[in-house]
Image (cartoon, rainbow, N blue to C red):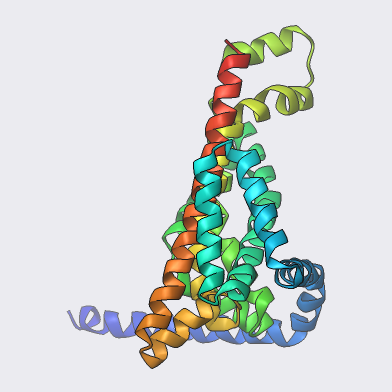
Length: 295
């Protein structure tokens, strides 16, 4: 029975050796290819900086007017527009405008990147059961992994700054886009696909003209979830240098500034409500349009 007593110690020793080996390999990779990775992500950094400068340097009435116009075009609801304007006016009145614009620019860029990466993956998953079986466990891990863990590898690879934070946010927030794209395409009525086949449509034509338009309301629900997750992760990413409303919240936690944390937290809630209401209203409008179009 002595070998049973030694078994936990042997397991711990093996695990310690494995950890040291992986950590050493990761550090070696970072030293050799860290500068290359920075160059690869330079366009993403420039895109983020451009978006941030556009929102922070443009006069606030113009920014507010454009956001209100987008809210109207997406929702066709005066209640949503009025709520958006009141929320943004309150944020500006309490001196949180610049931080809010930085947060919105980060959410915008993260959402664009998540859609650009997640949509093709979801489309491939919908066309291949094997691909779905491979990707789903990865998405399960990504959605259950504690959000702080995502900061470790990106900081080791790219250091502290906007780009590492952006990458961590995208990784954390991308699963809903992938899942809902796959789900929406798979839920398209088979009779419509058979009708498209009868008209001689190619696979690409079916995807572009039938499946994606009909799956769009479901995809919008996934984008809504991605936006919400991005907003939640931006606060955590402030720990590695992401600017915006997350940094005042972090300072408030560190220094016990109750009012600073409360007001900036309420600003984050306000942005989340705006994004949620606008994207949900747009998804519902798409759903009604498709129902009328297809009887």
